Length: 229
Image (cartoon, rainbow, N blue to C red; front, side, top):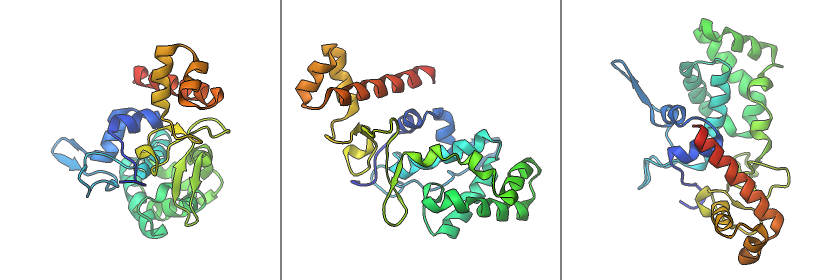
């Protein structure tokens, strides 16, 4: 699983700041009345020994789904867009590929013109005008993502511009680490809670104090998200 990442629903929710029930509906599917709705896509680990876990691309894709849901796009439309985009871009996880940021409007335009769903007329208007789309798929969703030469998401820097913290599926199963040293932010925060001194923690792990401080702020923010959920 090196290079894939390994996350629970709770971790996906924590790292993306999206409520766990919503993440679960998108990644595991759900039942409503007498109907059962499948996941929006098959997870990276669906054929692995840990089919209940999720991968790095699953984590990134839900951020885009969340952006569309916040702007009133229905799940049926997102489901169709995901399938259409997989074929259009020839990628299993199309929402976070580089081309989707610029070409995604064409995917939605084709789907909405075919279906004509009234509740999504607003998005169809966005797709036709070709300039409002970026307000839905905000550049901030892509700003921290680093891509490989093929245009696939490779790793994600979730916080500051100095890129001290990274989620890299090739390292520590994709859990947050210090970019330079690879020390898990969770370990640094646990040490800080014992030592109550970031300089002491930096000396123990032989990393810069600024990196320890960044890890502490990041983990404190994650804890706040967990408490607010």
